[in-house]
Length: 351
Image 1 (tube, helix red, strand yellow):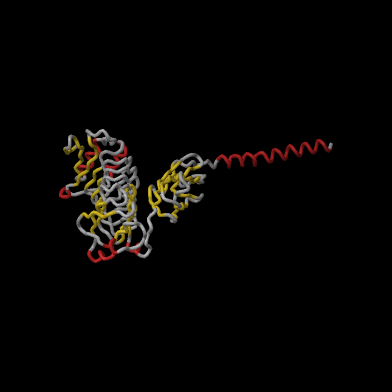
Image 2 (tube, rainbow, N blue to C red):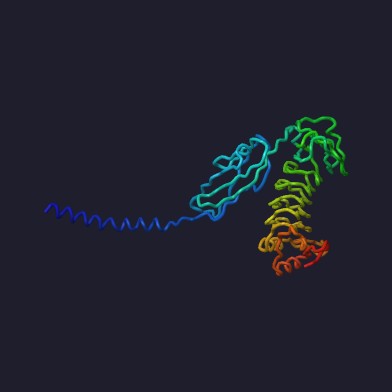
C-alpha cells in the first residue's frame, strides 16, 4: 500500500512539474542569440610616438548583439602592443596592424606607425608636424611653408632630431620653396604653420595631426601609406595624390574645398561631411561601382558659378581600378551643378 501511494504521489508530482519545465524551455527559446554582423574601430590608420598610449573604441553592429567580446591582437607587439581593452602602447619605431576579432569571426583592422621623433614638449605647445624621409643624412629636402606673420617667430625645424632648438634651425624661408639640409631622416617642424608643401620628399611617414592651424597640405608623390588629417579641422585644400593610401578620412574636415587623391589605393571615399567641397579628383584608385555611386551621391549642392568639377576615372591608364558609376548618378551630380569628367588621352572628357 505504501509503495502504491508513493508511486502515485511521484507521478502526480512529475505531472505538476512538467508544465514548469516546458515553460522554462519556452522562455529560453524566446531569447534568441543576436549575432554581430560588423565591427569597426575608431582609428582607421594613425601615427604614435614612442611611449605614447591610445585606446581604440570599437563600434559593434547591431548594438544589441548578445556577445560583444573582442580579442585584440598586434602583428608586431614589440612595436605597438595592445591589451584586452584595445589600449595600445607604442614601444619602438616601426609599423603594426591591430586587429579586433569577435567571437563569431568578424574582424576590423587598423594600421599604426610608431615614430621615433624626439619632441620638445615646450615648443610643441604651438603645434608640430613630423616627417620621416627615405633621403639620406646630408641630402636636402624641399619645403614650402606659409604662416601668419604674427606667429612666424616661433617656427623652426628640428633637422637633426635632437629635440633642441639650434639657431641655424630657425632660419626659415616663408612663402617660397627652400632646400633644407637633413641632419637626420626624421625632422620635426614646430609652430603654427598654415601651408606645408612637402611633395616629392621621399616621405614614408607624415604626421600633421598636431598642427591645428594647417589650412593647406601638399604631400603628393611620396610613399605614404597612412595620412591622418582628422584633427586638422581648418584644412581647406589637400593634395595627397601619388602615394599608397588605402584610406583617407576627411569626415572631420568640414572646411575642405579641394581634394586631390588620385593614384592611390582607395576602395572607398566618404565625402558626405564635406559640404564646402568644390573640386575632387580621385581617378586611378580601386573604387568599384557601388562605392563610386556613393561618392557621386554625396557630392554637395553647388551653384553654377562655383564651376565644381569631379574627376573619376582615367580611361587609358593601366593602373586604373575605378569603375564608372550608374548613368543616373552622373545626372544626379549634374543636377547639383557638378561637371563629371573621365580623362582620356590627356584630355578632359565630360560624361
